[in-house]
Amino acid sequence: MLTDLEKNVLGKSADELNASEKKVITRARERRAVSTDANEEFLSGADFGDRLADRIAWVGGSWTFILCFFGFLVFWALLNTVLLTTDAIDPYPFIFLNLLLSMLAAIQAPIIMMSQNRQAERDRFMAAKDYEINLKAEIEVLALHQKIDLEVLKELRELRGEIAEMRASRKE
Image (cartoon, rainbow, N blue to C red; front, side):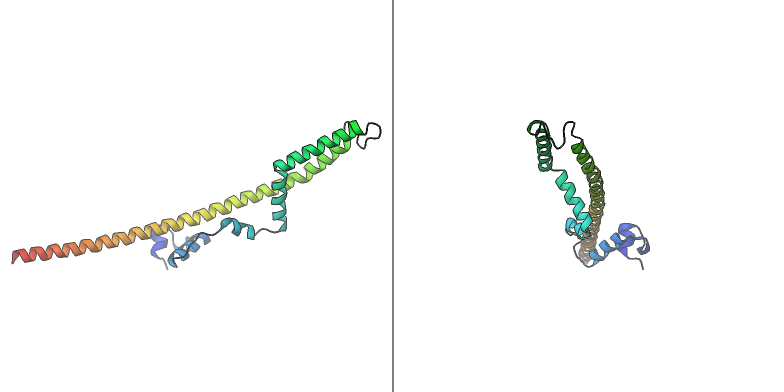
């Protein structure tokens, strides 16, 4: 069964509506809010691996990590060139350090890519939430317009009736 909302507002039949549009129309009919904490809702669907990837990317992309890692590199270079001139663990050109850095990059890169994929998912999720809220707002605005139009028409009918009565009383 087609309702005025589906036909007039969305220009679609009830069968053509997607789940998001059906949800918005149902909530509009029930006069309930559509907006929720989208970030919390998105994170509720995250598993342990997703949360871990986000956390690692957050730490790995922070100034604290960059400065600490730079400090570690300086410490490693000083330790192996100045302090341990005779029995250096990793003498210049720091082959072992190079291996460690390569392994870190090999592990960190896919984790950061996973986090970027999740950010893209989050952006799509937020866009869908924005669409729902905008659609509900549009439906509410159209409903208000319809109420105002009906009220104006009612007043016009009453005014016409009063004018007709005045004319009739003048003729008598």
